[in-house]
Image 1 (tube, rainbow, N blue to C red):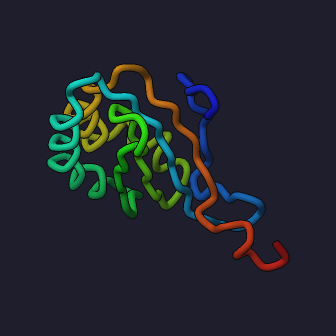
Image 2: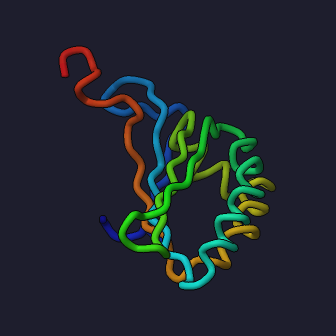
Amino acid sequence: MSEHRSEPRRARSGESVGGELSTVVEYAHLMITSGREAEFEAAFRAAKSVLTGAAGCLEADLFRDSEEPASYLLRVRWETLADHLERFPASEAGATFASEVAHFFASAPTVRHFDATAVNDKVGG
């Protein structure tokens, strides 16, 4: 995975990917402090409604790594890149969600954003 961007790029409202308006999928690799996995999972379940209730958030799911117990993948679908990079961090929902789960992180998450439409599903792709 690529390195975490401590200063994410600014997104334009309604930003398009490949010339088409598209939702984006955030993939965040999370490393949790060893031994706190059950606490983290419970905290995420409790805070998930805050995340999915945030403006622009369409869905969110957390997956546990099959090989490394303290490793997780958070997958969040956003209406626009700006909803995640600009609006969410500045929102009450962003602050609340972070306060519920961030203290479990052993290190800064590695975060990437992808076009929500598979390349093979695109016309001409």
